[in-house]
Structure formats: structure tokens, C-alpha cells
Image 1 (cartoon, rainbow, N blue to C red):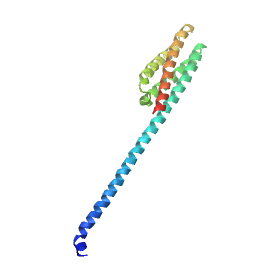
Image 2: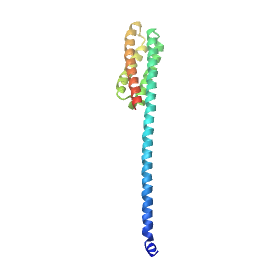
Image 3: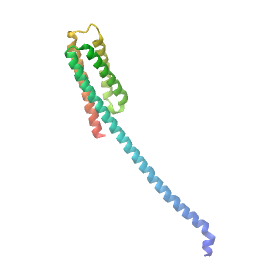
Image 4: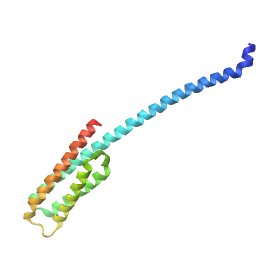
Length: 160
């Protein structure tokens, strides 16, 4: 009992040290769990963004098909409006999903520039039937770029 009375401070210090070590071990596990949760959250966010990009590119493919039909039937005022929709969609997608689209961003930016040229031509009073084959050829190229970007985004989404 005398030893206990003389060393009670040391004994309590040892118990305090043990409690501190247990607490630190648990805190370390909590930090690891929080980091794992953060990684899972980031992966989910990336997957959701990837699907958003895929969906937006699919919408653009439909707009391109509509635009091609409007050019084919020489409905130039309606085609002009639809080309402006396509240009806005491309611009937004490039800005919004830059990281999800990766290397496709440069091709989409070039396609967006071509859409702006098409839109300008469609608003021109000098547009005529003879312009249709050239415009349809450009739309086919743009469609290929967007379709390729969508396939890459889908593949990345499935691999991510």
C-alpha cells in the first residue's frame, strides 16, 4: 500500500498515457474512414458528372439530326435557331464538363467553331439550295466528333 501511495501519480500518468494512445488510435481510424468516404464521394461525383456529359452529348446528337433535316428541306430560319441551340450546348458542355471530356474538348471546341460558322451562314440572306451539301457535310463531321466524344465519355464513365 505504501508503494501505491508513493507512486499513484506515476500510475495515473501511465493510465493517462494509455488512454491517450487508445484515443489517438481511434482518431487515426476515424481520419482513415473520413478519407475513404471523401474518395468515395469524389468517385461518385465524377461518375454523375460523366453521365451528365454523356447525356448532354446525346442531346447534341439529336439536335444535329434535327438541324440536318431542317437544312435538307431548306428551312433556313428554323435551322438557324437550331444551330444556335447547338452552339450554346457545345459551349456549355465544354465549360461544364472539361475534365470529364478530356482530350475530346479540343475536338468539340473546333466543332463549336464550325457550328458558329454554320449559324452565321444560315442567318445570311444569301443562303440558297446550293449551300446545303456543304452545310450537310459539315454537320456530318460535327456529328462524328460529338458521337466520338460521347463514346469516349461513356467508356470513361464505365471505367471510372
